[in-house]
Amino acid sequence: MAETRGEAWKKWEISVQRETERYLSWRKRRRDARKARQKKRNPVVDWLDAILSAVVIVLLINQYLLQAYQIPSPSMEPSLLVSDRIFVNKLVYGPELIPGMLKLPGFRQPARGNVVIFESPEYISSGPVIDILQRIIYMVTLSLLDIDKDENGQPKHHFLIKRAIGTPGDRIRMNNGDVEILTPGESTWRSESEIKKDLGFTYANVRMFKPDDYPVFRLAGVGKALSSAGLPVTAEQKAAIDQYYQTSADASGTPTFLLRALDDDIYVTKWEDATTWAVDPTAVNRSAEWRMLEEGYYVPDGRIFPMGDNRDNSHDARYFGPVKLEKVLGKGLFRYWPIGRIGAVR
Image 1 (cartoon, helix red, strand yellow):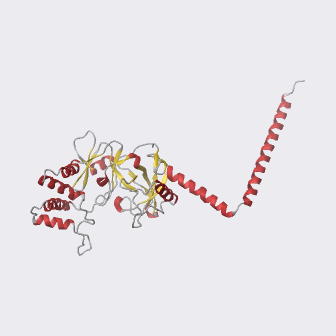
Image 2 (cartoon, one colour; image 1 turned 135 degrees about the horizontal axis):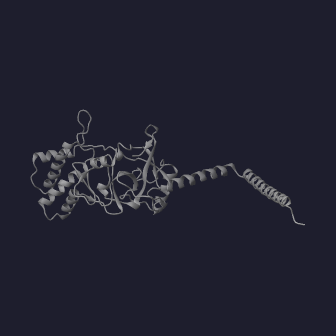
Image 3 (cartoon, helix red, strand yellow; image 1 turned 90 degrees about the vertical axis):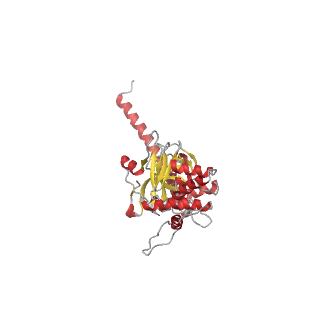
């Protein structure tokens, strides 16, 4: 006799009920077994397990998504101050698969005006093991601990935070302390302020020097070159040299000139190179250095030209050259400390 629809439905209900009860019983036995194992475990092991899990989660987030950085110097003032803490978007330019190795492709390349974090081209590694260990500790502690220190016990500048001023194909030069950019396909140099206005950028630049300081730089550079060549130096040139090296303060406590008197300071070097070359045409190295400063730094494909917003007090690409894109680790995203300065990094 054929089974009715009602009888078939009844059998199906009984089957579902049986399987549900079997699953719930298995789940209860599993949960009870887990609780029994946890009761036998040492509380210290539980704490260590929880801490290790938290460390792994923080490390993964820092390595592939967001990383915490601490601003080490005043080179990005007023946008970023010393000891500001920021989160960096690691995903946008492509994170490294392993700290310091195997960079993955990102969604885009650094654009003009982006605040970028990159490995310093001048960084001297202590070895791959120390590099990886330092990065892991730095990330896990949210930038609170940096074990990579120099001989004086100070953290090495492994990572630098600057603004991408030049992009591939640009030429960058300084004109009396102001940045000028010659973009690809153009024949006219444009000032940074013009480009900022066109692109809607609002970041400000800190200047250490006044416009009337630059003629003194030129006189100092010429005077230094003449003095090195054993040629007469005018009183005005000698005074400019003395002023260039002056680090004392006036009655109000304001430094009268340079806060750091570097012999190779780019504002003086340009005129020192030009004069040396004029005095001695065989000094081809001086000619090449002067021409680079006069015609600008060229930014090749696959590189950017980062500079600090604190334009007269920043050790940046003007000293170590354009930076490879694979060394760019992320984009400044959000300042989370101090509380009074919380906000987006622009």
